[in-house]
Length: 627
Image 1 (spheres, rainbow, N blue to C red):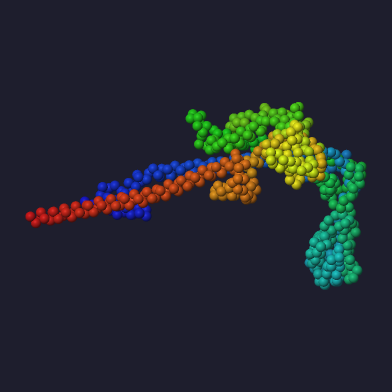
Image 2 (image 1 turned 60 degrees about the horizontal axis):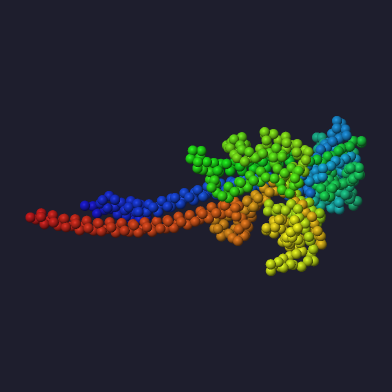
């Protein structure tokens, strides 16, 4: 009878007995429950990976929507600049000529009014444009031959020696060519502001042009040649040479001069660029109209709608159910994630709602612009033509109502989207809005001489008071910054006060849907997680620009419900499962080793018993063979 065979399986040696049952097979049967747990856990990790990818895609869509909302809100600046970029402050310039047939305006000038410029009209007449100084010398027959002292390239037009341009010396040596001299002039360009160019006018006719780089009298150059008379024999072209002159033009009836033809300082508080090209004919007036840019505004609103709709298309896919089973489809990765679901609902709530703080008869909702919240049967611009719910669309696919509203009441349309405030003091600037602010009107009572007050045993600052409906609140006040504390009617609102007081200031606020959307999304997508370990330890995260932020666990409590916390939760689940997998794998190896030893020992006993039995059988057979 066979005692079994010694076989190597992986890095183990096991015995296969005479029964044909392998020890490996027995071990796999005994360890099957643990292996099943490991396989199940591995699949769970893969599903969580899918969720992280889906959340990343969702975060990108939200980031794009945030950018679109930012273009429609009223951006903040500590200086409250009127030139902040904003779709409702977009401007266009229209140039008209008093003689459009014979003197088209763009032949003489162009203008750019930057965002925020005051809509108005300007008049322009150009007496002369600014010119640079240039001196042209002729009579050279070669660019490369000797042009000194009778050389073949210029019949001795240059003499050997030194001359100066704007006080900087240029040396002419015997045998120098026209090209060599021009190169020496250009080598000093950064110091002199003067350039030399050579032009070939015919087969054996070259000219040398020396000119200042900048226009205007202040940028004219001087040439000194008294010592060596280096330039005394040059042929000076008086007809084509020019003297430096400043631009001289009549702007809004005022004679104005500038050394440059591109003028940016006509209005100290506005970005307005005027470019002059040619002298305008006598009697011709150019009108420059700075006007609102309805096309840019409409494009920004349509972009906002499109980016919002992309989010809703994604949301539809992530919540789609099997019509027969009623369960989520395999592609609906985020359907059961509360952060995802509540975020989508909040977005729908914002676009379906109204701007706050406006008068009762003011436009306050998208519906008043002919924009409705509806559903799509797959007619959106996404590649898969996916149906969606709660999308933004023009009623009857017609934007005429929006076009009319923008042309007739741009301020009213802007109020639907923007954050706006009116302060009775020029010393107060709002620097940050908040969706938590509930007051639409309040009074600031500022008196820096007041001491702290004791309220319920706490010493509270009393230099700045906020009064809403007769109730006094004391905001956070440090330096020149005022910030509404949590739970107050101006919670989260930040202001900058540069006055000295005492002063009482009346403030009115209104907040549109784009500002509400931006603030909400700014909280949602302001950070993304870094490594798993750092994330779980609360040590590290990245901001929107990819910069590492240092934040402890206690600082992350305000991120509840954000995409950051959603991914953090999933990655925490992943780590927990990974830890369990490692524990199961370790236990599995220990169990395999134990079973292997047990089966090997049993096989050894069987083999020993078989050997003893075979020996007895052989002995018995030998005894009977002698008989």
